[in-house]
Amino acid sequence: MLNIPGPVSETVLEIDLKALVENYHFLRSRILPSTKFMAVVKAFGYGSDAEIVAQKLQTVGADYFAVAYAKEGVRLRDAGITAPILVLHALPGNFDQIIERCLEPNLYSLKILKEFISFAEAYGQTDYPIHIKFNTGLNRLGFNASDVPEILKLLAATKSVKVKTLFSHLAASEDLNEKAFTLKQIENFKEVSEQFSTSLGYSPWRHMLNTSGILNYPEAQFDMVRSGIGLYGYGNDPKHDMMLKPISALKTIISQIHELGPGESLGYNRAFVASEKRKTATLPLGHADGISRLYGNGVGWVMIHGKKAPIVGNVCMDMIMVDVTDIPCTEGDEVQVLGSLSRADALAATAHTISYELITSISQRVTRKFKN
Ligand SMILES: *Cc1c(COP(=O)(O)O)cnc(C)c1O
Image (cartoon, rainbow, N blue to C red):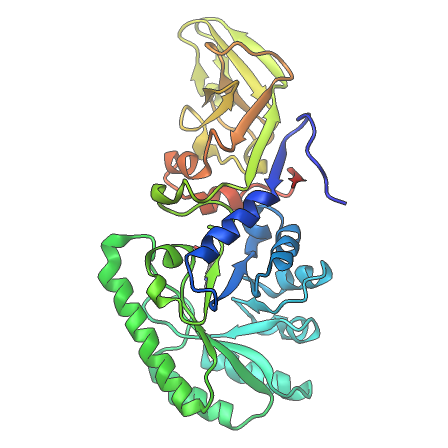
């Protein structure tokens, strides 16, 4: 049973599944109907709920799912996800989980390819689906073009695995100042993947684009795209804000109001000292819920009755205090921390970080509720 939102009585993350489906359809509208769509649901569905999000996307036709680690894929299988699941960061210690739960590993180095082949042979596998990742400039995970002859040799010597896709990842798809670099990465990928497929004798699907790649370089969609952040409503560029809708709202309530007189301090280490009369509200969420200490001392804010209330003093583990001197409000009133009035990308920017980090930080202590 889904946990449906009612009046807010504690800190909750409300997840709008209709917005998720609309974001999915918008992203799909930017690619050809024949291009497959891999939904990236790593890190608890970017801090939402990977299982519920994947179930919803499976019903509307997502072709593939991607997670970072094998254990995330296991949770999706336990939640009834039958679509193929790519494990972006397979590790040798997880091969048994991968094979037992029919997860598909990204193999990115000669070492891990050899180890997976031995493992698949020991498990008596034939044509086990694997994915080969090429490094085209990110220099994070992936084979270099010079590895191709050795990969082909290893593959030719076994029947245990079959290459389902070839892929690569862009370093700066959201940054149009890096367009020349991105185009070079796309060119590198085309070259290495064509050479690879020709020698392999069959053509695995190819994919390269993340969300910003879909929006900025649709000509490089190949056979499939991999989208994460866009599904959750962020497009890395204000020009997409009209089309994508944040799916999650982080809400809470005012626990207590305090009146501070001139010279009185607030919170740990007396980081805030009132120079004149102030009214503050204490809220039941803190850095253990995902509001980093970087947002304290006037950097971040929350919305109360449609008005911005800056965070004052240091963020505590379980609480923050906000300045409500000019906002008529009372104990028990609803507070929006993230949502339509307070976007994660805008709040994250105040602490010199990005929406990805802020939304994936919302901790498992926060109750998730689902609408639509
Ligand atoms: C996380 C990830 C994605 C998704 O990126 P978004 O910018 O969230 O769309 C795609 N590909 C790889 C390899 C990733 O690690």
